Image (cartoon, helix red, strand yellow):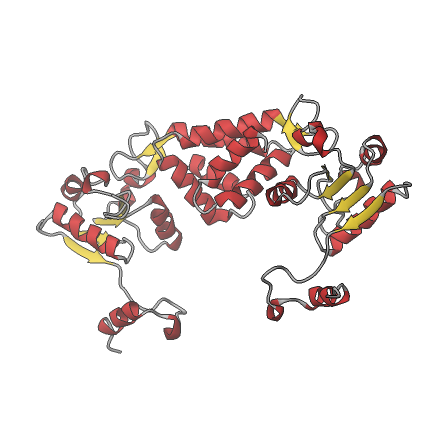
Length: 199
Length: 199
């Protein structure tokens, strides 16, 4: 195989959920295209990689040098609620559902022995300061409902400590909307039973 | 969402088998990476798009300006067999299996009313000439076993015409290796029955 094409396929194949066959398809698609999609994609990658950096306050990816991100600048969002998420994609998911109108704090990962993520790898330095300076009254944990997510949640709670007037909350566990009990795992079922609501 | 990130996601999402969620994951992966994978990928795209072009003889993508591709230059491959394939990825698949040692001709698509591919969109101009100048004795069709594939095969045969000493062949149809009859469609089953071998 031509070394230039091989290199391109290898780089694409390493991207999340692409793999070798996906990389081949993408490389062929770009090389056979006559409308300049390849150069447009390369330009967009370079522009984004050079100009995008995490917001120094909350960690959301934003324009480098703009000081803070769209969420931290928006005064309508300073309602005392701070939502702790793992990733920018979680922010997008929450924004799409319009369920939350406060501010975010992206920690950028979960404590995990398997992947070797340690407390110092997480974006937690500015967090205790934000609680007081932004008059936060509720810290909402929207981390994955996994062992790593819960471990990280407990660690972040210990970092913030007991601040008067600040409450902690986490997303409810239970049967998803449209969920069939047949397909539910025992853990979720037990959480859903334990948290049952009186009608 | 930040416009630069949004643009990057949209461009990735349009690549084959990626989609919006895949595009988000890829964009985040590149933007959060600290090892320069984004710039490396952009450089590889530009380098390949600028320097790779179809071989003027057979249509395999190769270095621009090199005259012909690795297959056309290889004298060991001039054994009189010419394999007609749709795409460079089919060449890779055949090469991986080491089942064929002749030369290729990439036609670059299949005749199809649905996608609007017409005879003039296919790489067929040089084909009749190759049959005589390369002393081809067997033309092997390795096109997809679909209506479009068969239509294209008949069209290509009519383009080449009846040349003395040149035979045409196509890949065998039947039960795939490890294939369970339970999961086989009626068309394949009927082809496999019709082509049964005496033991």
